Image (cartoon, rainbow, N blue to C red; front, side, top):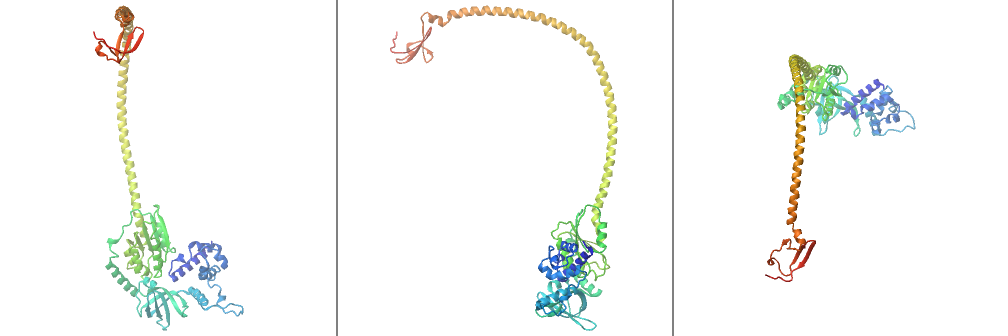
Amino acid sequence: MDNELLQKLKDWRRDIAQKESVASFHIFHNITLETIASLKPKTKEELMSIKGIKERKFEKYGANVLALINGNLKSDESNVQNKERKDEKPYTISGYLNFLNTEFRRYGARVQGEVNSLDIRDNYLFLSLKDKDDKSILSCFMWKNNYELCGISLEIGMEIIVDGFPEIYPLTGRFNFRVSTIELVGEGALKKAYDKLRQKLEKEGLFSTERKKPIPEFPQRIGLITSETGAVIHDFLNNLGKHGYHTQFVNSKVEGQAAVHDLLSAINYFDDKNIDVLVIIRGGGSMESLQAFNNEALVRKIARFNTPIICGIGHEKDVPLASLAADLTVSTPTAVTVILNKSWERAFNDIQIFERDIIHKYQKVLADRKYQIEIFSSQLKRKSDFIFKKFESIKGRFGKNLVTLDYVFKNAKKILDHSSALLLNNFKKNLDQLGDYLNTTEKRLSVINPMRQLKLGYSITSIGGKIVKSVKQVKRGEEIDIQIFDGKIQSQVNNIINE
């Protein structure tokens, strides 16, 4: 990649974006410029093959881009020259005016003069500037939103500096200077405007401490707005501690009134970003160079921003109004890093103290436990010696008792043997007696056994399992059971005879 060409392309894009009052990415994205710087296209076809460049973009910016690549911003001037070729197709009026206006954009400038006339309409305004020396007049046109963004109330006779580029209005053919920003001239005028705006915003409470948001104690996600050129950003990043910060950077102009649009766009970029704090920094400078930071629109944007803002803007005397509206203001970009690092460094110091205290307490506890273990070990040894002595004593007594126990066991065995023989004899005798009793009982039962009577011809009559003992228990027609020796007879009562 040709880094020198890339920087030229970025500078050109920045100037065009400022003149057209749009964000830089609306002209070309960074990736598009990087691709151009790598491929260095030479023709329209090669340039349009790059992603992000279509017909409309080429018509508007193609000639300038190719001129930059070729090392000559004055691209193909042969179209301007009136070649005497009969076959050359003539311009249309609008085509030629568009061509001129495209070329005129290269001649952007800052012009100083006195306001000679002023005509403010609904969406735009006309003014003319007069040269104090030779009374030359420059007609100017400005969109009203850009005018209001400058935060300056124009008056006849006021000396100002306008930033813009020349153009021809196609519908009238009138030559104008298209103004993008207006700046006051002189420290006196700037100081007067500063004091007036400061009093106005102070009355509204924009600088009051009550509305300021606290800075997070341990910020990690940092949004950073400053210029990518110069030493400020490098000083900031070099002084930012190694505490795991995640920094999102947006490049912005920070010099003069022309920086207002860039600064507002950069703050808008961070509107929906997940950051803990937004940092806006730049080096010191005069009131003229710090005009953007005394702009009302920027001050109000900072005051109502949802995320806490830290401003580190160097100044000679008066504190920029943007710093007064910020949630925290310090004098230099390096001081911002001190604020961001402060809580982390304090926490790191606290951790070191805690670490030292923990180690000290651990060593003390360890020493106390070691002493206690030594005491316990000594006590354990004494008690162990006592236990072993007791064991030896018990072991001796147990040996003696074991001999006695052996004699006791042998004597008990003899007693058991004798008792078991006696028990068996008594048991056999009792069994014989029980057998004789059973035989006698059996003979008695056989004598009174009903079945013996049934064998002799007797019977037993029953109804429903109940023995019939009287004729009164039966009725004619009832079924009766007659039990005899070798079975049962079922019968029915036909007649009942009472005796």
